[in-house]
Image 1 (cartoon, one colour):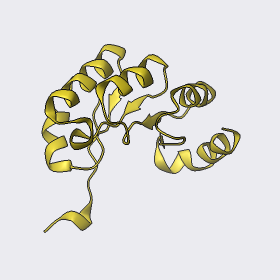
Image 2: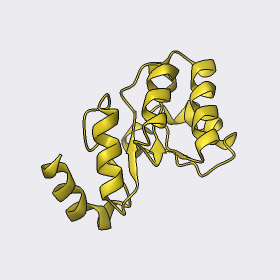
Image 3: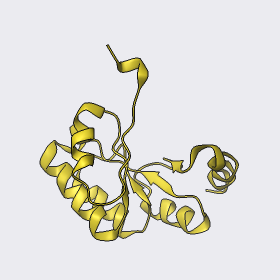
Length: 122
């Protein structure tokens, strides 16, 4: 975690948040890192279900959750993740699949970001 802490402190001013600074399944490590930083932590893009997000969110491991609708099992599980994040007042920054996530993020009551990749445009 020490290396991640130093890396985040170095890169954070340019990025605005620390994205996936540790393995996505390391909820406790993310929570410890988040408690050590002023920089928001974004994580979760590799998680595959609402239950995994619940563990991450309950641990206080993220300021931004990054669900990926295709990876979590579709729209309904994604909406469950949104509800968990909303309950804790977290921000939402869905991972990839911007065509789907734009519409889902628009339905989120809190702060939402959507990735955009120029190289994916026709």
